[in-house]
Length: 371
Image (cartoon, rainbow, N blue to C red; front, side):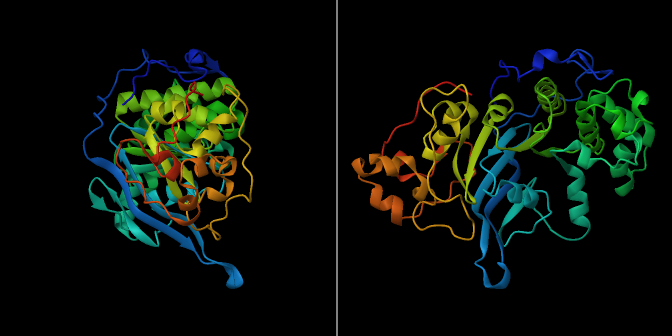
């Protein structure tokens, strides 16, 4: 786990007013439990996961997830990053139990995930989803209380519903919680709506959340507050998270580890410092090069956008690879392998790994500042 010496962007705003709601600071609330130390067994893992969708009217099969190993440990935040269409959302949906894999398996706390029946309902109580757009996640006809209590009712909660809803809203930074019970989504700011969505996940006391672009629709100052909230929940509740995003800056500010995905495969993985300060895969280098803080000229990827129904032979990135196009791969003696030899699936282990013939030949990492 990396030290939290770097605050998330906008974290200085935590404790300020967000449309009239008091945003809870770390001193406002006592920790409920200590953070589990990463390094033990995986909480959630995917092994040799493949998810394919048959094409319509004779079109080729789309291999949306094409061999993925991924581990998330207790108390760990993993960022899954990549362009639109790389398969990251499909992978996340499978980890949530929403899309059964074509082959491979998902395990949670050492037990294989059953994609049907009562076992799946129990699993969904322990693994919760936080969506990108809070406006689309909340029923405009439901009050905040009803929105947060919905999960409790689905799972037949037998305790004090009002106390559970109040506790979840409080942990999500909406205090006093009773002030929000009878409000409707349109009466809240964007940041408050996202906090209600997070409270709806927290009310079931999950062990892991999957956050799909959790701050993409929010203003910059509110983004920082939500990131700080997610970090506080990890530290206080021992909550694990998979954060799905195209934003490498977000990954830098919140994640312990990062997995970079391209055309259905993870092509580089490791600690966030290792991957984002010294990227080895040309695709990761290209993603980082377009950030405003990046040194040098941005890398413009040529060729067709990735299509999971037409995955090329050899390295799946070779048709767009700037290292191959520039002749660097030829100089390193790996150009033929780039075009013809597929690469092994990266294991889900926490160590730094890269699926690239050029990088494996000693092509060298790209140094530079973090996002």
